[in-house]
Length: 631
Image 1: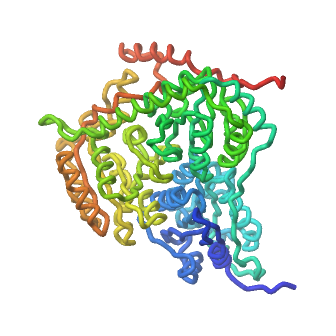
Image 2: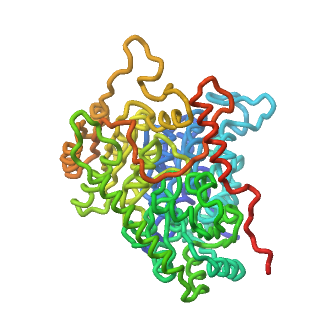
Image 3: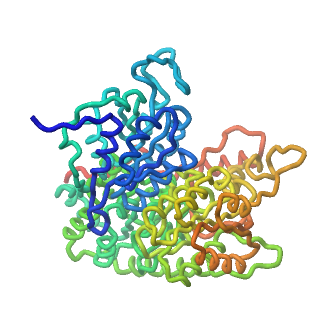
């Protein structure tokens, strides 16, 4: 009979997590979990709190200020580690648990691992109902944690301690499997957390997890090879899967050998260095002139590790006539585009495809055309980001500020990581930010979650403490979720935070008007206000109140000097600057489907609807498959 150890359910959970190991990007064996973010309440403080205290040296516990923010930080930590390390998050039952729903959706959409451990109501029902308990009149087993079911890749409620014996291995499989990867929720009733059980000692033995690199089938590679050999004008789109599979070198070798130009997604930016001759820049709605021109003319598109969401495909209108080859570890994603499917790891898939292609290359004229378009786009980026002097009274816009930050990075000779998530900045950064390093560009744009930026920056800094982490965000995102500035100061994880204040939700204001709408309820000037009006918000003063150093600047020149001070600072430093919400980078981009009303009293809306109907005719039919008939 095997030896046992008597522990509470919570103690067993924490002990198990502390024993999990993985090999990181450099091949070193390290803890799988970098720690646990916790905000304690009556649903988790006694059981899980005591267990975490006992294991605080092996599994650090970090205190935060908002449950959604700490979960976002944990997700960013995993993304910065290319999904090879992760964190757990615990909350009380009630609002602490429901604050996790947005973050769980964010992780689910982006295929990123995070372990959520919300407290739950009493299984015994002895003190029923308890504080914060949701009472479902038709289901006595329901709690608010059931909100997390549809946004979790794996959900379990532990109603007996011994259920961990099966639930935890299943959770680890989902968290470490590239095809299944996403959020896991283990709901932990507070009375069960405190119950003891005699656990097999070998359950807590150290285990080294391995990321499964799934090879593609020979049949998939053969079909893709035939499609590519017939192509004259191929383009490859690099998505986040290329980074998570550590396929950057393999991608570069594929491009060099076969002469296939590369466009990139938000998640895939950095997979191929910005200055590679066949690097076209971003694809789609936030895309470059080069990428979108070649994609519109492509006869075959090779989609590597991308979900092919609408911003990448131009709502399925950008390259509607091209045949699509999808290489993805997730079979669900290979179906998108209705073309040739290669299910497998991005690195192994590119290697196999390259071997099968032999010495095949795309047409030399196509390569030359791509290289020329790439050079022209690079010149556009240099011109926009190099703008330093503006006419008197002219506010800078995002592109000019990005240029100042990029120059600061070059001058410091530091390998910066830029972090962003929502608003106009993702479009501008995807077009204009230059990175040669996988992971140097950290964008959460699958869920485009306002408020991710500062918390995400904290998670990135915890993952990469030796890198300068620069968080860029708008005033709307800052006001939505900023408390983790205080956490970054408390933990000694320095961030440089740049707030671009355009006086409201400038991005959606422009979209509203592009759809024929009147400016309404987005900018402070266009929303209902009391007699005093909207106050002028002092973001620098607010950041200083949370322990950061901060200043407001009035020009690009002042910003560049402030960045020198921020880099010299040993703790978090915020810089705010007023920006023009009307100006954006005009070059690049393509149509994006946003439904326009068929009926309106406004002529501008009806005109926008007519343009919308015309644009929809360019979309790839939903039923199109492009599959071969086997001949």
